[in-house]
Image (cartoon, rainbow, N blue to C red; front, side, top):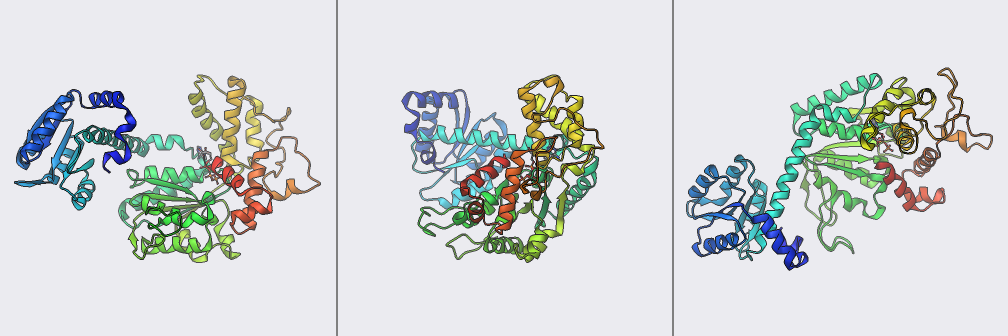
Length: 490
Ligand SMILES: Nc1ncnc2c1ncn2[C@@H]1O[C@H](COP(=O)(O)OP(=O)(O)OP(=O)(O)O)[C@@H](O)[C@H]1O
């Protein structure tokens, strides 16, 4: 965490560095708490030469007093002070409006540095250090503070209307919303060891959106949400991506790295398309959930983790496990709190309400004050099958808004005469229909994008979740499937 490892002084260039320092330190009030007189004076002289105003003291009591009474921007504190530990100032700095505090540790004081960060220090400087490092460390501390503020702000607003605003439930998902609220209530009571949640539904029905909603409205919203598209994980690296690895665990493991489970510790891990994981990884995920522990690749040690796991699948895990294509034990573990989001075509008039909700957001995004669907388009929204579900609807609206007449929106490929609500629905969503040679393009149009996605899903499904095999089966590169999946995930 020493600054020159992340932001090289050289990389700023001399004039850039001078500008950077004066912008950072000019007019700033900095408290130095250091009992070594010479170092204290040197630091103060350097910071003042950069335009900062310094208060330099030598004891914990003086440091506490200054923190409680002066309007400070930053604090630099030594660990060992004659009357106690400088680490005790971390809490005081936080109470005084989260003033960034950097701890100066003695030579080789790694344990103190780790302790300092754990207790909430912004960063540390290991002695001896070059005073020129200070502005960079303080700069990082300042942006870290900004980020945590922003995050808190987002979470606070996400807890109320804003999180709801993004997601439209409507009448058809009202029961579902009630169930999700119950999960959130139960979470608040449990606080620890939250049971996993499974969300199933066709592609584009909103599984990822619901996972984000659950996180944003839940008790862990101030912690990380780590999203993993299991279908896009490179096969050979999937285990180390999920669980991390030790240095030298495999040829390219030049450094030890934590995995996504550890990254999500304390927060939420969302495993999208969980059925794409190999059986051996499914077993490891099960162990992680049940024991609350993971093991990095190449390590003999286990690491405790405490997270909320949300898994999603656009294929029924029950069916897959009945066919032996998904581990039954993992399915049962996930099935405890499971929800299925219905496809858009089964949500009745909510399809139109959803379209209006999406249009509102998109019109705002593109700066349209007035935007509305044509009457024909409204009928089309109610009649069409929407095999790509909400995603397809959203893309159609966005395309129409950008390319067409915003005040009377029409979708590309919409037939001239849109039937009334009584017209029969053509089952565009089923894989067999458009693969059948006797099939012809239906009057009301057809989504090629959704057809490609469906074909890919079908291939993955038939190849037991093995993406490489699926790619060979439909004659495309594995990367193409990953590209489509990543594109969809956006
Ligand atoms: N209830 C909803 N309200 C508002 N927007 C929604 C809703 N459901 C889905 N969307 C939008 O539809 C798009 C697709 O949703 P999402 O990615 O959550 O679907 P998904 O089921 O996870 O898809 P996939 O199975 O392909 O991963 C997103 O842009 C999302 O914002």
